[in-house]
Each structure stands twice: as C-alpha cells, then as structure tokens.
Length: 198
Image (cartoon, rainbow, N blue to C red):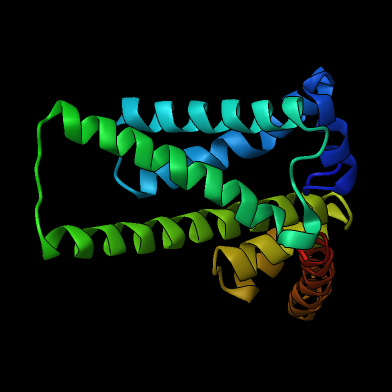
C-alpha cells in the first residue's frame, strides 16, 4: 500500500474486516497519534490510553458504517483529529477527576479555549511532521540513492556542499542539482497528499 492515506486504504477499512488494511492504518497513524499526545504533555500511560482509545473508536466507526468518513463534509485529517481530540479530552477529564482538581468560573472557560487551541496546534504539527516524513520516504525510493543522500546531507542536515561533494565523490554543482531535483519530487508528492486530503 502507498505510504500516504489513500482512498483505497480508507475503502479497505470499511466493515472493519480487512486485517491487512488495519495493520497498515495502525502502522501509519499510531506513531503520529502518539507524537500528538506527547506534544500535549500527557503522561505516558495517559498518552497510551488516548492513542488506544482513538484507534478503537476509528475501528468501531468503520466497522459500524462501511465508510464513516464523508469526504463531502471535510478532510480525513479533520475527522481523525476530531476523534483524537475527543479521546484526549476524555483521558484528561478522567485524570482531573482522579486528582480531584477543580477549576471554577471564567478561568475554566479560558482553560477550555486554551486546551482546544493546544489540541489543534499539536495535532497539526504532528500531522505535518508525519506527512513530511512519509513524503521523504516515498521520494527516497523514487530517486537515485546518491542524489537523495546529497539532498539529505546538504538540505536536511545542513552540511557544507563542498564537504558533501567530497564525501560522495561528486561535484559541488551536483549537490545543488540534487537538492533541486529532490525538492521538485517532494513538491509533487506533497501536492498528491494535499489532493487526497482535499
């Protein structure tokens, strides 16, 4: 299966019976969801609970409705974010009750707004990081290994182009050309990802 969320993968999840599709879905999204919960500062056990509850809710939604995600109502990202945020809030509420924390009045309303903004920002950061990592993986398989290595050393790790050229046994100009070629492929793959999201 492709490394980006595809309509094919979403269709295969319908009915909740395609174990291969679910393994692929978990492989793709469990780490992203864990990164999201960790950005929020959840304790390890709370982060694990939120991720597990999110994945269970998604599975249940696909099992109950053949295709619970309605593309006409928005992006898959927004649908998944809504479920993840709901589960994070459930875990946080349980934690707050367990610790008998009470916040009253206007301060509580401000806290709710701040929590929602943090949830949105954290999910978006982790989504972008995950999509970029998948995009880089996909592009790495599409270009010559030396070209990708030149790009990675120079553009990603910030190494001096003369040093990279010497290390790879190519000209300094080849390093710049490699960066241009790989960036062009990255933009094309990101455009495909955005098209699927839209």
